[in-house]
Image (cartoon, rainbow, N blue to C red; front, top):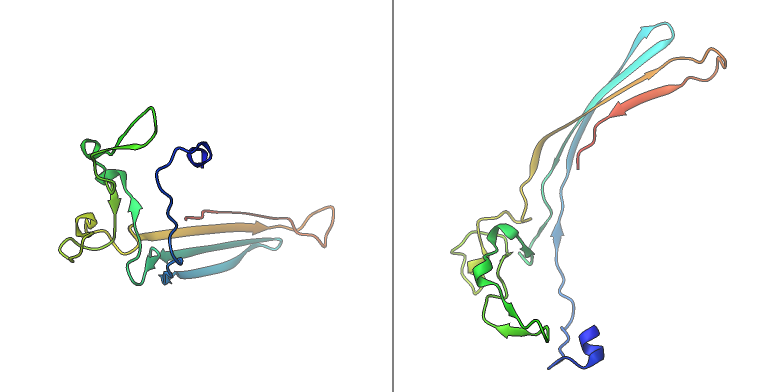
Length: 154
């Protein structure tokens, strides 16, 4: 924006209509819980949640990202430090990846590295335990303080 305000640009282009991407998101969760009356005035609650959240992906493969693992400094685009313009050379898609296996064809085939559709691995074995207890208050017989703890994964 600053370059445009100062007049430091050679051309101006706007994209057409925004592309429509059909996202697929799935999540599976299972939860089990039990209560145990440990004493006449003490109740213990315990449970566990299991989550399996596959990565979101684009149904038609319109997805890309920069992954530093595939960036090669020797192919970096050269920038003129005085003007800020691209001085030439380099690969403008250096480090950019798209989902799929090499050999799928097309001009972006060199950006395929066998990554899954969501460009990230699905996390499995996400067990999240829960624990809680309840005891009546001696000051207020009708109230029962509750305490608990849990772990959550994202």
